[in-house]
Each structure stands twice: as structure tokens, then as C-alpha cells.
Image (cartoon, rainbow, N blue to C red; front, top):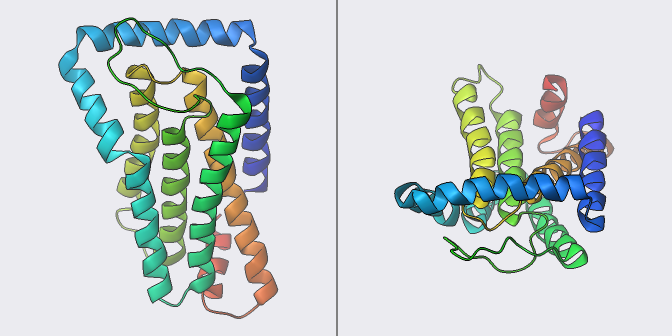
Length: 224
């Protein structure tokens, strides 16, 4: 997990720098992909409508935050207060990081003469992609902490999480409100937040020793 956090964090920072300085090869690739997908979105209104439903409702950041809130409530009810606070804190810190990066980079969103959707605030990183990555990552982590007996259905849940994270990124570029690198940046920064959260939680559990949730935490460590 340390290697994963370091690699994703380094790639996220590298991409941030390339976007901030306007590296021509990246901007050109972004433009080529965005233009191709926008032509498809304009030509296929039915598919565009489906993408809007998925982006604005199914995988919307508020939907993801609601899932995180339910998870926090469930953990609190189980008296796993530290884990509940970790999930809540990571989700909130992610929002702050995301907004801070958007303000610092100030990247303009794609502009089209015939837009099929609209969005506010700066483009980098994609808030939808980052929020989905953090929420799905945290939910899988929490499930892994508790669902260690047999793990039936684990593949289905993992697949659903991957489809959600990749799918929401696709919708944002397809609808013409993000550049591809915005989405990749959201994925990288989002996963870095998840990895750091898991690492720091394990460290906190080791310091606490025998405490509520310590057994499940150690099992997760063994599973990794």
C-alpha cells in the first residue's frame, strides 16, 4: 500500500505540473480525444441522455457522499468510532483538496459551439472522478475489514466499483465538460487519498493496540 500511495501520488503531482504549465503534447492529446467524443455526443442524443443520467444522478458526487455518510453511520452504530471518523475525515478532506487544486490550477473547461452539457468551477481535477474513486475505494476497504469470511460476492462488488469509477470518468469527457487529463488527475489524486487513509488508519490502530476495530484492522493488514 505504501508503494501504491507513493506511485499514485507522484503521478498525480507530475500530471498536475504538466497541466499547470500547459505541456503541448498533453493539451493536444486532450483536445483530440475530447473533440472525437463530442462529435459522438452531438450525433447520438440518446446515448448522450444516458450519460447525463449516469453522471448527474447515479455517479454524481452527492450520491457518492450519501453512500459514504451511510457507511459512517453504520460504523458509528457498530461502535467502530475510529474507522467511522477516518471514512468521514477522508471524504471531507478530499473535498477540500479537490477544491483547492481547482482554484490553484484554474484550468478552463472545454468550450463547444454546440454543448450537450454544462458544469461550473475549474476543470482540473475532475470532482466526479475524484469523489467516485475515494468513495468506492473507502467502501471496498470497509467491506474488506468486515467481510473476510469467504467473501462471497466480492468480485461483483469490486467490479461495480471499477465500473463506477471508470464510467463516471467516461461520462465527464463524453459530455464535453472535462478534458481526459482532468479525469485521470481525479483518479490519481483520489486513489492517493484512499491509500494514505488506509496507511494512517493502520498506524493509528497499532498505536491504540487492543481497541474496538483492531481485530478487523489487523485482518485487513494480513489480506493486503
